[in-house]
Image (cartoon, rainbow, N blue to C red; front, top):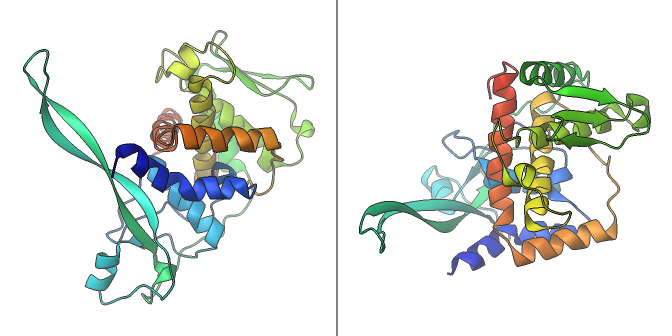
Length: 286
């Protein structure tokens, strides 16, 4: 299977969701990070895909495994259940034609996993109840911006934004948001953008942004959306139904994922890097 076909297979559920008005990276996730049968956390785009599928299907387990792994422990997949495609990258040696030197090259492959709710395996209890105090979110915002020297500008008339030139986050007052969850989700979005500054993770979408709507802009926005979702999960912020997306927004992402299906996995990886950076600078272990 060609690489582009693999990326398309992985994001097909996301595209199908968008057609129904469901935006994967805005969906609340109440469980701990998705893990495999050995308890190892999925990373980047795979994490985003599995969190989306978990919320969409209402699964109560955060554990996933392949068909063979499930059989190995004496379990079986329930009749009629369909798995979820996720990616893995195979590293191999390739000779550079220009220099004659060997270098590492990457080849994408996919495999299919099933949530434990789709099997007859006994599900371990997962604590999904988080008190909505927002103390963790407030603390994370203060500690990160203070450590990085990022100025916060609150103005009732402004729109949420991050300025890489001034290195500041501009936010309307809290009273301008419909809920505390909406405020923190928006703040997290701008925090993730701030990690792209040239003196931090130096992402092209922040350091070399040429125009609204280009590929770098789309990818940077997706990084910020996924990253904010990850930070919500980290701080117990339930962002359910806080955004009303226009049809143009939905159509844009359907087109983007169909045209460049790899953007989701790429953005998921960068989002996780951003979240790790934020948590580290705020003194909170990822």
